[in-house]
Image 1 (tube, helix red, strand yellow):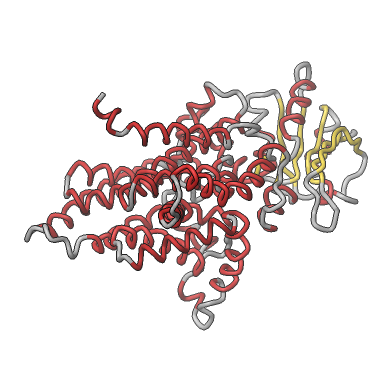
Image 2 (cartoon, rainbow, N blue to C red; image 1 turned 120 degrees about the horizontal axis):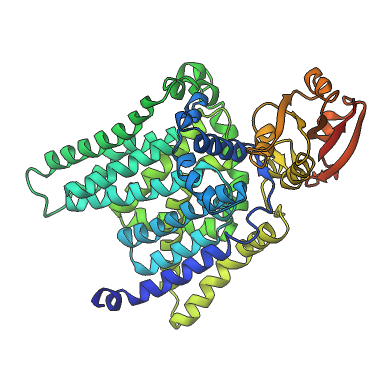
Length: 499
């Protein structure tokens, strides 16, 4: 009771932040079409659940499996596999919200923490990706808590804190290999070590020992992946996604400048201009005050962002998600400092703050929940998640139709693709069904044609990809995708293949 009374204001605000968070995450969770990577991760989780010997199947494609492992139990409670996968990201995002709140409180103060939590709950960047079954939300959750415990360790020099830090870093690495960067950044937390008046002579040695404990725990977690086959694929696939320093000789700014242009498009749309300005104010004031904890947070968010810009071949907004939550720490601080300068009541300050940050963010969030895609969504994200072949419209309805047809006979389904949106996006709904799925490439393969001689056979693909390439078929269903800027649009189509 003493604890509840002491922190009653913060607990009340956290309660309302949680309500706001879930109101903007849970409704219409499957309204957005399934994305290619979502389909892959969910299908891997189903395979892992069905066959224990394949619990490391994702490693064969260079992906760590923790996200899929945690998804498996959700299938027992949530029938729709896409909803199960996205619900996992919602839960991961909630832990990120808590991390943002408590990290802001540790670095700044409670008022800043409340505003930072609200920023996380409503910012389009986080709302959009917390509603997708992608590993980045879970990596962001681990990372924000790694920063929190790294700062706590600098202050306390406690073994139990070091061990928890190690588990969190290990969880980040098991979620996605870029989580290794947390281990590389950890020594920069020494920024908060020097200049402390109460520092004991042996404190530096002690912190190095505690870091060693944390890093060993993290690496033990990572090396658990050696229990599965093809552990070497985790590093072998790096060349598919990352430029080596040797490739950039003579053109060091080649990927960096184009990626900087991408960020210049993403941030104003996914943060909103008011939030970006408030973040800038928060960073400026923190640096002006030489807040060492804030500088550590800044290093932690800039390092992965700059490295991604400098070396990644493929660059999308979700790859920066681990830097977004720490940025919102500064947003909360910046807004709290702005409101401090107003000589009005706290109620007026709160209304003023909400008036600044809510309108643009909530317009985006409302459109995302009710009629996706939002108008302010960046062009590349709109193409990938709503317009192109990577967006799977109507898959659940198509699967239900096929399941109904296969109840009395064997059905064969061909797909335009071997991996990704198709066939994985349809397989997640046909798991354990009496349906054979055959991949093809931009046309109906001979194998699918031959299957039509003895079986009821269908083919699923993108209408534009298949235009002029399919014959002797009957269109059964068509699901239009989002319109492009020029007014054209693609569709998901289901054809019945005639013998």
